[in-house]
Length: 231
Image (cartoon, rainbow, N blue to C red):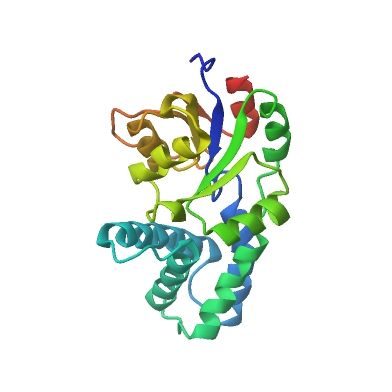
């Protein structure tokens, strides 16, 4: 078992790691698809939406035309996926699909694990989300008082851009190797590890990890196992 005695802070991904995106959004997606007699399931639509959003984020960072923000990449992605499935992407339809993002909820074991981890570590959100959206989600949906909430907006690029991780460590006044990135997104762990962070991969979705030298220090299935591994 790795030794985390030098670790001072846990930086948590929010979307898909703390917040259950699929579980929260698919009921809204299903309702909207049923109203349109769409020939695609809510699960398949969500998988396409999430995949396309990642492409939008990478394109946004690579083209360097100005950071668009998280919700804008979500909007662009659903606009694409609606059209890909033969659904009219009128502004009111896009807005209807976007509405579910205001009702995101955390995975059920998250809060109890955070309560255990706070005795030893600074607990920090490090997210691709827009600052105002993060404030709303942390306060109203997660309802947890984190030590800090850091948005990638401050560096103008989405994860896994190295400035995100180095900038976060700097904001916390810590060396990069005093931080553990906790994420259910393997690219996030890879990016953090390449910058000198430790990494805790919460493999909620039973997916393979990248073929890279930058492997996680620990891999767990959920936050209950995370707390057991880090305490």
